Each structure stands twice: as structure tokens, then as C-alpha cells.
Image 1 (cartoon, rainbow, N blue to C red):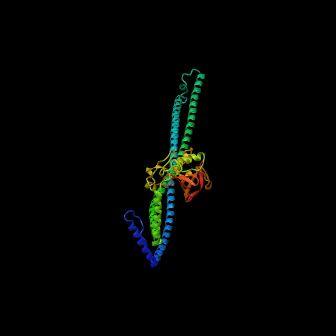
Image 2 (tube, rainbow, N blue to C red; image 1 turned 120 degrees about the vertical axis):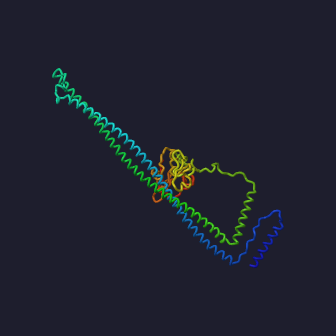
Image 3 (spheres, one colour; image 1 turned 60 degrees about the horizontal axis):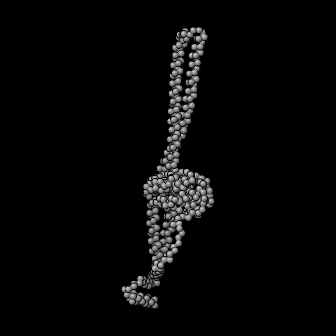
Length: 436
């Protein structure tokens, strides 16, 4: 220890001498000599470092578990949002069917009423004819009924004419009765259709109530997600701070000096590199950061290219149609906290609607229905232009477009933008849907 201490003193003296001899001209940043800890100090430092390293390991494991829980929360929220999307689609369909059935029933009812009125008028005329005939008939006196007849033949002709007029009116009444029956049947059929439409509308109302319940559950889940995210970030920051402290203690005083010298060497190398004249060149390929796409052809290329034109467009829950991004809608939770209802953009299924509209394919605004929009192929056989889906507990809540080379384009979640990323296999459904 004495020889080391003496060597340290000589280093300090030499350093001071160097600084003094250089004067105030060109100052050199020389780090101060590190302290010379005793064996007991070094032993205590290593023991403390081991304790903190163990604690950091525990915290790191806790953060990993918490992040897994956060991913599950995100999936649950996406699932509830897609439930709300499905309810909106079903409700609109039921309302349209009910409106058409009501219109048909109203038309049939008017036609039936008109036919009934015509028959009533004809019957009234027939009643008047019968009453007039009765008044002039043989009950009062056959002579008064046929006054003016000049011969028995004339009398017979008048009787036949009276009978023919009566039969004609009866035939007309029969025809109108048939028409009324036909209209009544149509009215009955229309009413049955209206009853069925009303049943569907009642089912849609129940679906709407379920959607409202799902929305309420989503709000709570999203609130929990925000709180969990905040707590996770706090835990992660604390873990990182503990890790930094543990690393510093584990390094020890002598390793601190070595790290500083390493930093100084790297700094000097950096300054030397900056002082050298640039050699021109710089290479870089002419794409300007564009995304290189694997080869594909036909409709798949059209769909992929159309989706790629929307890279960077904001995520907006409920946004997007066949013509492009649209204003998002309120969800009462996370989407609202990100202001999706004030953004022009896409959600996951809205981006698919826009992409496939380029080849004339119309998709519903719900990922669960989009999964049924084409032929299902094994995930291992996916090809560019196929749709990929993610599910939780068997229920689909997210969709993306496969573009090849293990990559996909998607509108991920509130607060994000349309992006290209590697295919995520956690929670992915075991098939791809091929529309083209």
C-alpha cells in the first residue's frame, strides 16, 4: 500500500507540474486522480453492489410482468372498441330494414283501404239498383213495373234487360271483391314484414344496450389502463434509477476512473474525427427513407399501394371510409383522452375499408366482420394483400394488412399514426383472410 500511495503522490505532483508549466495558454482537461480506497471499503462497496444488483433484477422482473399486464389491458380495450363498432353496424342495418318494412306496410295499407272503399261504393250502387228494381217489381204490381210495354215480347225483353244489368253489376262487384282480397293479402304480408322488422329493431336496440354496456366497461378498462400505465412508468423509472445507482456502486471507485478515461478517449476521438475534412460521398440511396416493398401483383399491389399512401395519418377511432380518412367519433374513454373525435384519420378497420376500396371491395367497419369477408388461409401461407387479425378470448379486436417480408401496415391505437411494422405474433389469429 505504501508503494502505491507513493506512486499516487508522484502522479499528482507530475500532473500539477504539467498544468503549471503549460500556464494559461492551452488548458488541458485532465481528470483528477481517483481516490485510493482501502480493502475494507472496496469489500463493502462490492457487497452493496451485489445487494442492489439483486434488487434491480427483482424490479426488472416486476416491470416485465407489469408491461405484459399493460399489453393485455390494451387488447381488452381494443376488443371493447370493436364490440362498439359491431353494434353500430348492426344497429344501422336493423334501422334500415325497419324503415323499408314500414314504408312497404304503409303503401300496402293505403292500397287495401282504397280497394275496400271502391268495393263499398260499388255495393252501395248495387243496393240502390236493387231497391229501385224492387220498387218497380211485381211485388207492387207487375203492370207498374213494365208500364209502357207494347207486347209480351217487349215485356220479356225488358225483364231480360233488367236481369242483365243486375248480373253485370254483380260481376263488377265480384271483381272488386277479388281486388280487395288481393290488397288485403298484400297488406297482411306487409304487416308481417313490419312485425319481423320490428323484431329486428328490438334486437338492434338490445345490441345498442349491449354496446352501451360495452362502452361503459371500456371506459372503466381505459381508466384502469391509464392508471396502470402511469404506475408502470413510475415503477420503470424507479427501476432504472436503482439500476443506475447499482451499476455505479458495482463499478467501484477505480472503475469510475476507468469509465471516465474511456469517455475521455472517445471524446477525443470524436473531436479528432470532426476536425478532419469531410470526404464527400455520403451514399444513401435515393429513396429518401421510403419503405421498400416486396414484389406482388394485381389487386394486392393496388390495395397495398393505396394503404401505403396513408403512412403517418393519425389514428382516429371510428375514422376512415372508402374515400379516405374521416373525423373520429367519441368512445368516452381512451380515444376521447387523445382527442380522436377532433382528428381526421383511420382506425384499424377503417384503413382496411380505404385500402380495399381501390379494387372495388366494400368492407364493413368492424374487424370481426372483415375476418369473414374472404377466404381463410393458414397463417403460414399468408401473402401480400391478406388481412391479419388479433383476438383476445376468441374475439377479434384488431386488423392489419400484410405487405410481405414479415411486415404489415396498420393503424395501431389512439395517439399513434398509420405505420409499417413487423408482424406481431402475440395474440395473432391462426389464419389470414384473403379477399382478392
